[in-house]
Length: 275
Image (cartoon, rainbow, N blue to C red; front, side, top):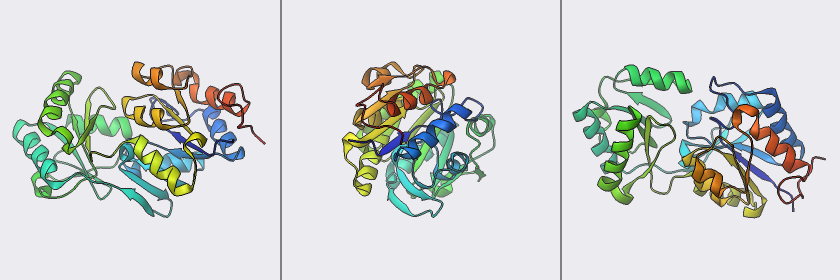
C-alpha cells in the first residue's frame, strides 16, 4: 500500500519562526509529490493566510484551514467543507470580550475583524502576517456565525480563560490552544482530524494511506487519526506520545528528515518509495 495523502501543519513544522521554509523542507514536499502523495496544508490559520505558503511550495488543491473548520481548494476557492460557530455563543464571547477589554480576533467569511489595532493585534500580525480589518467595535457582528474566534492575551490569562470558557460553554464550541497567548473557539466538530477524515473520504483515500505531520495541541486529532503520523521533536508531549514517529526538532528540518525516511522505507510501512 502506498501513502496517497499527507496533511502538513505550517507553524513550527515546516515554517520557521520568521515564516520562511528551508530548502530541505521544500525538497521534501516535492519528493512527496514525485512519489504520488498529495501534500495538503493543515493549518490553524485562516484560508487566505495559507495560500501564499501554498504558492511558495507549488501546491494546488485542497487546504485545511481554521484548524479544520474549512477545506477550500486553492486557487479555485471551491469550498468542500465549512462549519461555523452558532450565533448565540459567538455573540456571548463578543460581549464578554467587549465588557472586560480582551482582544478578540473575529473570523467571518474568511475575513479577520478586530476592534482596534492595539498591541495584541500587532502581536498577531507580526506572528502570522494575516490581513485584518479594524472595525472599532465588534458588537456589530452580534448574531453572526463566525468560522473562528481567538482571544489573545498573556499566557497566564489565556490559561485562566481556557478553563473558565470550557466550563461556561461546554460542548457548544471547540476550544483549543495553538500558542501560549491564544485561546481559539470553533464549531464543536472542527478539528484537523475530522477535516482530514472528510478530505480523505472526498478523495477516496483510505485512512491507512494518510500521513500527518505536526507539533501543536491542535494537531493532536489528525496525528491520532492518520494511518502514520509524525511529531516534531519540539512538539507538545501529548503529540509526541500519540505520533507513530518522532522526528528531530523543526529547526533541524525534522519534517524533511521524516519524509526522507518514509520515502526510502526506513520509517513507516516501507511501501511508499520515490519513483
